[in-house]
Length: 464
Image (cartoon, rainbow, N blue to C red; front, side, top):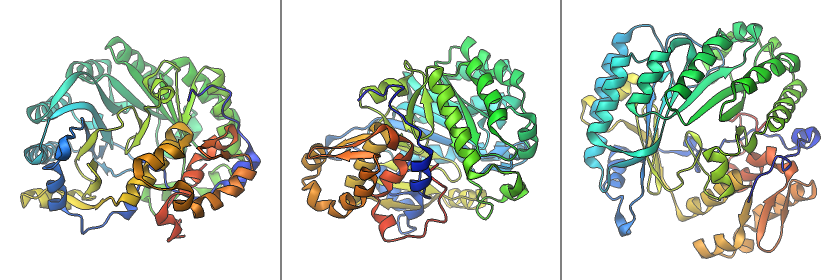
């Protein structure tokens, strides 16, 4: 189903009514449902049976670099603040060991179609360390020509020479953190970043042949308002990135320590946040960007927009993706993998991560093997999140169920949303309407069996 600019209606009243706390569904079941009973041995077993039944899925790799030079107060990522590059030298040795161990356990093709470096700040690594890490990856895996190889970049720490090196190493996509260009907001979150240094990195990426440049913004930050964010949007639109993400700042100081340095009195009110988001959507769609879903926008000719039009869009731990059927192998502290019908996560502290590898064990902390019900519900949540529609008939054929009977409770729960104009349900389709698109997470939550038995949602951020 093609997504046109008109197919998103921002209705503040409906958003207030249905805005609940819930998961972002980068996986289903979500990571907080993983169990320690799924351990390193269980993961090794699944790496060794990737081709059971003659299925050979392509590979996607994720590498987590946890280090940052400075702390951004809004950040809830798994990170280590340090200026000591001795720490990254040690980390790369352990990463190389983990790469070798996972690769040795892996049955089937080692061909990679997708690679992503996240963090932390991947560009914390020196140029030599970046070369060393890519050499370790290429030692065990084959990166196919024209694959999707992306890296998150902090423009404050990167020059044109490093961007050129990234291009030489094979990276062809880049994600740049901006958050907000307003100096008052930047000071409040301890991230001072000029338009000029951001522009330099984007221009260097284009000069180095990068196919896609993405910019990340955050709404709801301290000292932010509609007028100031409008200036940020103006500058970002001038930079003309291929993709944009506009994330909702979730103030959860109990879970993310750095956020305790943010003065709650400086945060915009819920109404002001909605106005900022509404402005962002209008400005971006007027500038020609397509609303992909949740908090993502892309130019009409970007791969994400094309994949959505062709029904190939997918979600994984990095967000929206064009590689639906890839097995995702992840490396580094806290990294999340998806292989076959399983998910798992590495240890979250660097000490536990090192200890496991010192014992010659894969550093798996927890995971889950999906049940047939999990696989069924995951396919439904994926379809709604990526395409805003679901063919109930195709679900019945793929999973050998009667949809109306199996999901009687869920369909009853959706009736209030249907009456409110968020979606329509007929004999063959569930279709999310323009007014429901901003609330797709709330709609997907209805199909989450774990949430039904667990009404405690304090650990989740608001949908909007």
